[in-house]
Image (cartoon, rainbow, N blue to C red; front, top):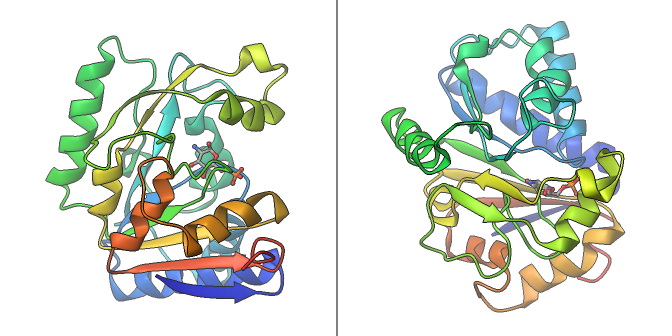
Length: 241
Ligand code: GLP
């Protein structure tokens, strides 16, 4: 794992965005894996700015999101579908039918998991996957204890994850209890991974990732087994390194 420490969140976002943009220029048909949460929003803002100013085009890009809540409609403001449209898709030229997110309202959720997994493979896999990290080490929504061999699957969200994400909802009760997430094995098949880590609430998780052992009890630790991972961490997140 390569670690890039930046002085600020802005610098982290700037650096990661610049690398993503250069990869899109090198391969306009990039299969780009995307994440939600607060951390990647700075990167998305810079991708939008660059699209407006430098006209970087996403017309041939396919995007694949990591996860989606179960039981929340696409139009709901708390769905990851809505989040991605608001924070990125509506502001760049990616055709909406080339943006892919698991459907958390599918009638047959097991079938939806199989479909999404197969769909990514049929598109040739993900070239670059953007990841955030949960305080408990989750990546996507793969909570501690998830098998490293897991494919896209249904997960019961940890109470700590529901609490952390309740800031987006009216109350904790409104936070779904389940999600569909790409599995650990699905994520590990990405050719390259950028892990974005920001803020002092992530300092312990980052220190455990860098210094700790590889264990299913700490999902992000699997990234140590991947050949092409870059971690972008700001000063606050790097405080315990
Ligand atoms: C959610 C998402 C993850 C994300 C994590 C951290 O649970 N499913 O993909 O990495 O939150 O989010 P944040 O960046 O807001 O701390």
